[in-house]
Length: 495
Image 1 (cartoon, rainbow, N blue to C red):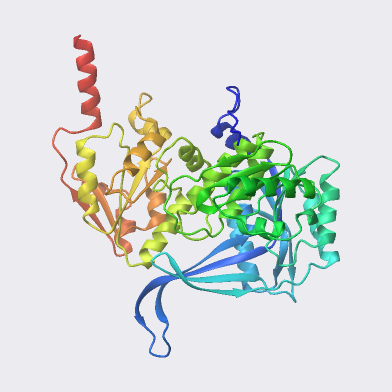
Image 2: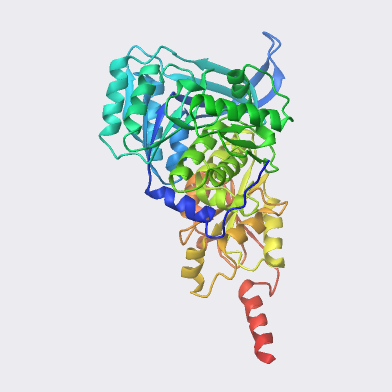
């Protein structure tokens, strides 16, 4: 294996992800609605030897190609989604969720005779108990395929096209040919998450992202998961046969294998994470790979970014999108298993609450972590089962404390706080107060120091109106960031 070292003048991960905001992306594929019934199990049914799930929450998320589109939108790109849904409540919900995520659905076709694909998962303690599927895999009618392409073409010209195949009938030979013909004149890259046995069925596919099982089906052979050389040789052979520039094979806990058709392969190990749920990890990979390639990344760079994003995604339950800042932090070695964007945090809080956990939140700048901060956090953690820590962003700290603050950048502050055992989640907010975050999280307990009076606490009315309470805890005397800065400055001036 030949691992190539990026040249010094290559853009950083942040620069590549920043460029994604200027891109237009088409996502064409099988659209699904992922539903989650989350609760607890404490008895077996008297009717049959099956667990009884006491449902605490019901949640719907975008799945399949729609989940790919959501991840692209989270990266900041303009994304247009094309696919089929039914004229039913599930289809309507998909359109609403797409709208909330900023996804252009002008090319989503609603068919009265088609049933929207749905997957309902029953979860307890972050484990799936059962999955119920509703689907219609009828091939896409030719007239509807042409309608979708016409609608896509009425928008922005894409910088890259993603094909998300879940074998539900959308990506017919006719539609695949039409997409190839649309992409060829402008030399638009087509990135494919395949399901077909014959990878050559995706004409014009530049990069394909099969998982190991899909590679086995395409190759007609079983692989030893540890035999990287044999897997690489098969992947390169299949890439050449399909006319693709490369296959990027996802291998679960073993990471990812980049297999260009005519160049040395690259094995990328997975990053050490707790695996909660692999659902949607392939969507994350194809979204990151395609978008960052279009943003100017090399194939190896794009694969590293996709591998990082997938590593974050599998540490959470269900289909999720990963924020660019989280990816950058993860690539730099930070602790992002606890550092969450607002959307991911809200989803995680719903999971905790469905499991009967009591949510505590406290907030602050936490610049120059000291003993006073630790005391506050340890006290706060005692008032519930889960402690969420909201940290002011750099811009927010500057507005509150002055242009010389913070001394420690927000990503470093978040990573250090996330390493504390008493902290279960950290999020960064950019506003002057955490009020909008409190509205999204609705904690059971809001904790502040006794340097506040109860009536001064932002969000007090909101928390108490929901049945929660505000707790003021004692502070460690003479322990503050301002005092610490003054002591350091005085020592420096005395020399």
